[in-house]
Structures are given as structure tokens and as C-alpha cells.
Length: 285
Length: 133
Image 1 (tube, each protein chain N blue to C red):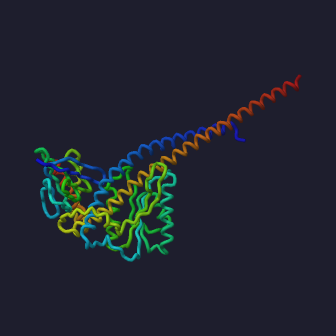
Image 2 (image 1 turned 180 degrees about the horizontal axis):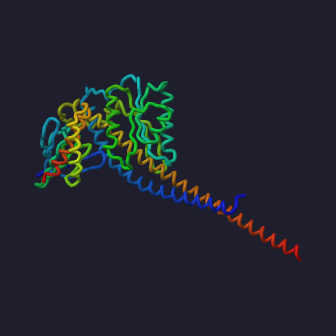
Image 3 (image 1 turned 45 degrees about the horizontal axis):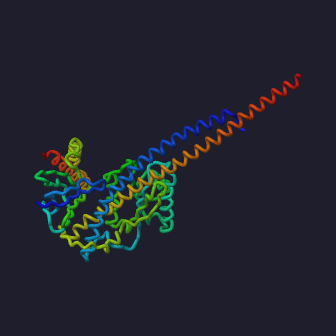
């Protein structure tokens, strides 16, 4: 049985850890609120864009654009959004597992797909496994601006247009609430279900419907990536908050268990000492 | 005088949403003004200031990489970035302009050149808007 001093030291160290996890939980909670607001603020832009793209696609029947057309799939692109830092529960593991499983099912060799990664955790993971990472972005701030991911979004969309791959999937953690984040797969390109919800306002286009689409579609795809990133950020803080919350709770439980053990050990020592004294006194008389 | 609602939206936030008398923008085919009851219209925009007229006051907004959607009762400008005069950091814009100038002089490959050109335009746009009083 551990001596009183050992137990005491252990209690102290767990209490220190508890302070850290508690602080991280509170920081994550504060950041979560801001991330949620950012995700909210980006929504009008994305919705507006979709509206306009929709109305062009449905208003003019015979628009053709490479980003709207399905092609036979020879190569696939995956864009994976992870975090830079760990200690966020299953946040990174979940989404990375999903990607790896899909890739294993769909592809036989590394030549059949390429990866775009946002976040240090994802990059390290794929590099360790020698999977083909085409471009990466790490060290994003907690409230990423559109300019921060502009380049990766631009490249991934452009490579599709150039025919480097024939479809592009987006992987990220969808934010449901602070307790639940679901890793999701979304097909970004080719863009589909574009026609249909036709709020058929007939617009005039300058220079032409095709010309406008030319500018709009890449922008739309980039915006989808950005909103996914913001959602991912909110999920990250949600996951971290939950993970750190339960870590704090576990630490509290451990401290109370250890305190009990410590008190028992102390009591046992006292009892033993008394009985020794009593025995000694008895022997003398 | 009749007015219409103008909204300027970026991925990060809504920059502007007010009733205005007139707005003048620079589309890729040229500059044009929008008054109330304009025909529904969509066009991409150049990197240029957007001029808003409201209550006989003019306001300039630096808009970069966007397009304008005109509806009967409403005009929406969607842009990657948009700054009002008070939001522009003049020193930063100046620094960006100098950087872009140097890059343009260095004459690298075409892609870098194009990028420098664009960032030059953005910086000039911001400076113009900021200095316009």
C-alpha cells in the first residue's frame, strides 16, 4: 500500500492537471461562442450565392459549365479539415478514420486520389502514412478569415476545372451542438442539384449567363469550403470543451477517491500506533 | 424620392444594409449607376470603389472580387472583401502597394505577376477610397 506521502503527492498532481483542463474548458467555451457567431455570419453570403447560381442554372436552360458536368471518375480529390492542436476528444480521429476508410474502399493505389489538408493533425497523419498530400494549410487562427484559405480553396477548385481529378469531396466535422459533432462527407464538385428550386426571376446578365457562371461557380465552391471550415472550427471548440469538461470531472472523482484512501491509510497508521503503545504498556506492567 | 435597399455581404459579415437613393458600381463591362426600379440584373464587378448616394451624402466602399445582383426592390453586392472608409488601414494598404510594386518589378512567372497585379489593384482601391473625402 502506498504511503501517505505518495498519495498526497498524487493528489496534488491531479489537482494541478484539473486546473489546466478546467482552464482549457473555459477557454474553449468562450471560443466556441465566437466560432458559432462567425459561422452564423457567413451564412447570408453562402445562401445569396447559391440563390443566384440557382436562378441562373434554372433560368437559362442550356448553360454548360465544366463544373456542373459529371465526368467518368478516374481520380478523386479529398479536402479534409482537421485542427492544429489535439486534446479535442475524438475530433480529429473521427474525421480521419472516415476518410481513411472511404479511401481504402474506393481506391486500390495511391495514384487514384489526392488529398488537400487543412490543419496540422491531418497533415501529420497523412504524411506518416505516405498518402499523397497535394496542398496543406496549417496554423490557421481561431477565427479564420476568407483570405486564410483562399489559396487552398482556389487551387482545389482550379485543379478540378483543369481535370486533375474528376470529383472533389469535402470532409469535416459538422457542428450539431457543443456535445455532438458528426464527421460528414460532402461532394463539392461537380456541383449538382443546381436547378430545381427555381425562384425564376429572369435576370439580365452581363456579359452573358455563361460569363457570369464562369466567375460565380468557382466562388461558390470556395465559399462552401470556407463555411465548412467555420463549421469545423466551431466543432473543434465544442469537442475540446466537452473533452476537457469530462477530464475535469474525472480528475475531481480521482481526487476524492484518493483523499479517501489517504484518510484510511492515515487512520490505519494511527490505530496501529495506538495498539503498539497499548501493547508496550501492557508488557511493562 | 424613392429608395431601395442595398446590402453588401462578405463571407465574414454583412458590411452594409441600408436604404439608399442610388449606387454606382464598376462592372466588368463598365461603370453603371443603379436607381430604384432597375431591371433585374447580374454582373461581376471589377476591383473598384462602390459609390453610394444617400440623403445627398456620398459614401465610398472598397469592394474586391465580387458581383452585384439587382432585383426590383433590392440590390445585393457580394464580395470577398468590402471595407468602408473608416475600416481601412491606410498604412497597411500602402505597405501592400509597395510590396506589390516590388514584385511587379521583379518580373517572375506569369502566375505571380498576375497575383501581384491583383494585390496592387486591391491596395490602390483601398487607398483611393480612404483618401476620398
